[in-house]
Image 1 (tube, rainbow, N blue to C red):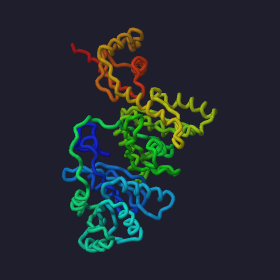
Image 2: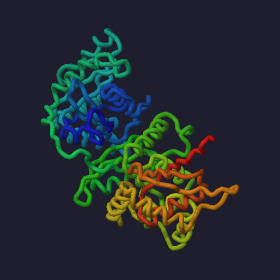
Image 3: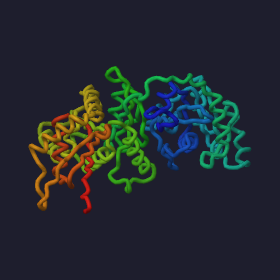
Image 4: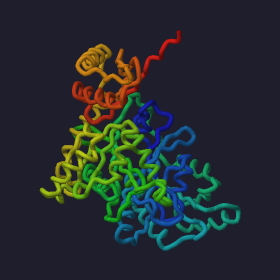
Length: 454
C-alpha cells in the first residue's frame, strides 16, 4: 500500500487506526484494476486488456473527500471456475468476507451475463452493502444503456468510465455513503509493523512461504512461474509481534524481456524492495544459484535494505547438492557473506520458525549506531595495525570518521587522500568484525581533504 498524508513511516492504518475496507469484485476483464487505479489516483494495480491479470487480492490506500479507506483489488470472479481460476475466485470471496462494503463492477457494454447473476447471489448472501458500478460508460448513449442493470436488484447502477474518469466522483460519493465511518484518530506509537519484502526469481516458493507464515491460502500458488504479478501486503503475527509481509512478483530475467503486465510487475517488485526495511531473498536450494539471484541481491544492496537469504525446498537437497551449494555460496554470494542464511521448506513449514530470529538479527544490524568516540578509537587502532599502502610516493591517512545515519549504516571518513577500493573493503570487513552489522550493507563515503593552494 502506498503511504499518504500520514506521519513518517506510518500508513493509513497506523495513523488513524483501522480504516474501512472496500472490496472491488466482478467477472474477468470488466475493468476492475483500471477502476482501482482511478479510485486511488495512481497507476498501481496491474492493468492489461486480457482476463486473469490480477490473481491475488491486493490492498491499496485511498482517500476521497478527506476520508481514508482501503481498496482491495481482486481477481476476476467466475463462480463456475476450475483450477487456478477457481482459486482466484476463492480469493475474491475471501475479500468480500473481510470487507465493509463491496464495489461490484459490471461491463455496461455487455449487459447482464449469467456469471454476473451468479455473483449477485453470493453478494446477497454476504449481507454486505453493495455499490454497483456500470463501467465503460463513455458517453450519454451508453449511460442510457446502463439502466438495464437495475434488473440485477442491487439498486442504482452508477455509470462510470474507469479509463476516462467520467462519473467517478459520484461513484466515490456512493462508496463513502456505504462505508462505515472510520474510528477517531489515535495518536499512538508511530512506526507500525516491520516491513518485509519476500523476493526471488519466479517459482522459488515465495507465495508458499507467505501462505505458511499467514497459516492460510493468502496468495494463489501454482507451478506456473509468475503466478503472482502484484505485491500483496499481509499482516502476520510471528514471535508475539506483527510483521507486514510484501509478497512480490518473481523478478524476470530481464525487465526489457518482460511484456505487458509482467513489465509493470517487475517494476513493482523494485518498488516493494524500496518500501521494505528488510528483504528475504528466497532461493531454490535444489537449483544452482543463478545470475538472476545475484542481480536481485545487487538490487537489494543498492536499495540499502537489510537482507536474509532463505534457501527453500531443502527437502530436495541431498549431500552432493549441499557440497556444490557451499561452493556456490562462497563464489556467488561473496558480496553478502554478512547476510543471515536459513534453510527451509516452505511447502511443509520445516524450519520457517528460524525466519524471525534471522529478521531480528538483520534489522538490529541495519539500525546499529556507533558513537563517534568509539568509532575513532577503532579507526586509530585499525590504521596503526594496518596502514594504507604507499601509492606513487603518497600514503593517504584516515583522519576522522563519523556515522552519519543508520538504516543502512552510513559512515563518512575524512582522509588525507583517496583510498584504494581494497582498503575500503578492509575497513568494512573490520567494522563488521568489531561491531557486527549482520544482515545489512554498509555505506562508506570518503571525503578526501583538498590540497591547499599556495
